[in-house]
Image 1 (cartoon, rainbow, N blue to C red):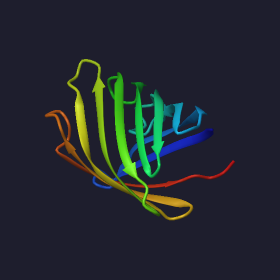
Image 2 (image 1 turned 120 degrees about the vertical axis):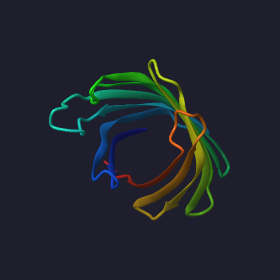
Image 3 (image 1 turned 180 degrees about the vertical axis):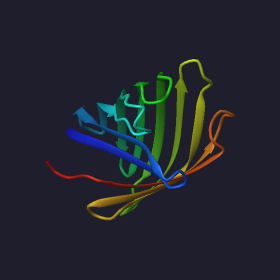
Image 4 (image 1 turned 60 degrees about the vertical axis):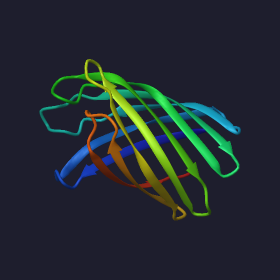
Length: 162
């Protein structure tokens, strides 16, 4: 019901670390409907001049019906890492189907930084279970003018028992 969480994003096109965070996930209700909370400390990564940090906290929910999983999250953030601090909200939803080691799905997510238009992206994704690691790939398209037109994603994730 509890996990330490870390995130690390490297942008090969920019040749630098784009994001990093550490945090904690707590899911007190674990049934066919699970509900919990994840809080992350956003670590300074952009440059030596920018020493700010931030925080993000999300309410999480997962509905499990046989092989179908529906994940929903929503919450807020404050980020002092950019030149001008940002705050706002973000939300997302994923529908996936477990098929052995494969979990194909579709994701939609939105983010709004205070005073800015809402960015919405969505698209297909696939998770491949490789035992101690998962490979995750996705291709998201912008659903609003403010979102990036096309964003490919590739993640390697793992869980280490404590």
